[in-house]
Length: 340
Ligand code: PEP
Ligand code: MN
Image (tube, rainbow, N blue to C red; front, side, top):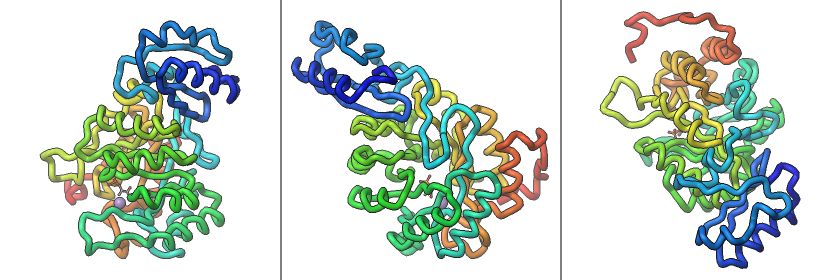
């Protein structure tokens, strides 16, 4: 639809499609509304949809991910989270603790994040842990801490939701909903976040292909939510020196296939503090729309992912890299320092 199309223009398109026995999916993004039509293509051809008021363009989409494809939306999208605009333009820094542990720890991490230029705070209240004996997160108490820290710092909050039944609860506190790698093909959860009016950050499945990742995003978009940020967080390979292998080529590939913003998580991909800055610089070099990093005021005591959490000086340096203020080749670590 054209940028100035009204709700009744959209409704008229939907009605015309449904009158021909087709289905119409309305997806509203910040910059434009897209109506996806599914049905008999021959029949749609006779509906003269292009002549309806407010219709900008009628295009046939050949790829399986229709609504999120660049074929359907040639301009790259911007997703707004609080005051942050994620998309083409300056890269966004999202930072915060892996897990919300206490109000003090979360506030200190948030202040470190804000001082380094972060415009969105991350922090997990529901943690998808490999072991049932590991810290599972504070649940709703953690969401309350995030909301308090948002009030104190002004930073909007992204936090993970792991269960479709918790989507409304998490959405009532968060500014953006995170879908983690382990839930990247949990289709009921993807549909549930597609039903709420909050942006979604969708991580790539650790063993997911780019097409599977894009199809997961299509599940969200198909329910009417086009405010999706894709996050490359590393994939499983034979390599054991890193937690995951950052698939840096996925960034420009996905930006060509989809209009959605693509960010990188250098913390969960490398799994090592010393790799976060180099991987961030790689992400910036290939044109990522932002990075999301773990920070902790005292990583040695962290209840989750301490070894990859940045401390104050690291984060300051990373913030400088984000602003393009770090000279090339700065602080290359020697061999010994690179060992895990
Ligand atoms: C996280 O960001 O806290 C997280 C659990 O990441 P991933 O889903 O990428 O492992
Ligand atoms: Mn983590």
